[in-house]
Image: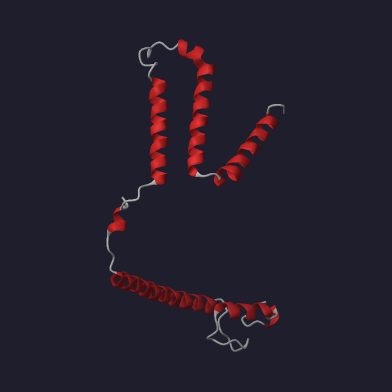
Length: 175
C-alpha cells in the first residue's frame, strides 16, 4: 500500500496538469517548456547512469557523439515543428488551395449526388415498407377491419392497436 498511494497521487496530479493546465498554454510556451524539460532529463540521465555507460565497450569510439546526435535530432525536430506552427506568409504549400474551382460544376455535382441518394433512399424505404407490411400481415399485425385499423397505417400503429387489444379479443386467437 505504501507504494500504491504515492504512485496514484502522482498519476492524478499528472492527469490534472495534462488535462487542465497544458491545453491553456500556447504552442511556443509548450515548445520552450519541452526543451527545458528535455535538458533537465538529459542532465538527470547522465547523473544517474554515467557509471553504467563506463561498462559499455563495443561503441567506445561513438559514445562521445551519441548525446549530441540525439539532442541535435530532437532540437531539429522541435525547430521544424515550431516553423510548421508559425508558418509562412506566402502561398500555401497545399496543392488543393491553389486550384481555381468552378462553383457551378460543384453545385451541379452535389445536386446530382443528393438526388441520386434521395432516389436510392426512397427505393429502400419502399422495399422496407412493403417487406414490413408483408411480415406484419403474416403475423396478424397488418391492417384489419376487426381492430378498426386502416390498411394504410404503418406497422407501428397497428402494433400499438394490437397491444392495446385484450388477448382474448384478438383475431386469430388460438387459445
